[in-house]
Length: 253
Image 1 (tube, rainbow, N blue to C red):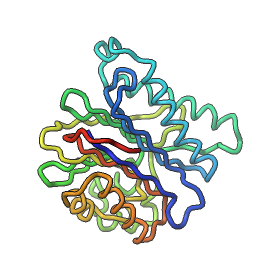
Image 2: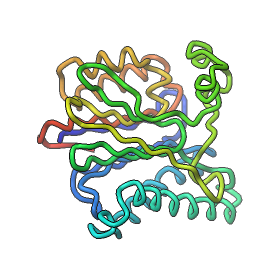
Image 3: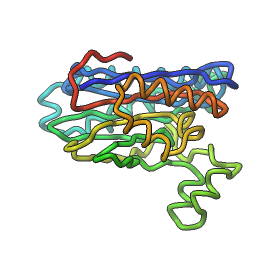
């Protein structure tokens, strides 16, 4: 596979509270692993939360074995790693007054045996481009998107709602966390995109689909999407990771 990722503090924020990890080499029994986190709670607490969570998930998975994967399955391993990260982050927040109230979103993905396995908490997203059509795989854990799913608000209303950035789940916010899991067949998938809402609030899905279909490399597509997010305001940190699961070129993150 070929992948490329970028992260930027944007044009408004003083610090970057996003964190990204990508590896096409084994992380424990996972043949590859991709993570994007978007921290909250202020500059120091937010960037601590996102980086700590990503590193803890990676560390927990590195300690697992192929036997663990065969016995428990990929969902259980991801859930265990995220649960540990959540508990440890919440414990830190309770002990450190400067970090109280911190938390982070997390979207995680791994590709095993021609299937994409995804875990999600918060409103960072994972999309696939399949047969030229963009499809969001994750569901946002946000106030407005949950209202949209209940039929109480339209997508158009949600896009401009004053609470559109209010999330309903975050790692570290409580002692226990609910994680959503998804999977998708990788057949005919041309691109996988993981991103924070700093991209999706600035560049709509129609434009993202167009860029991912433009025939250029993941690096060129990532650079273009980042530049457009910044040109459109860049009001938040922007992180995106684009994967071409069909190629075997050098990857950068």
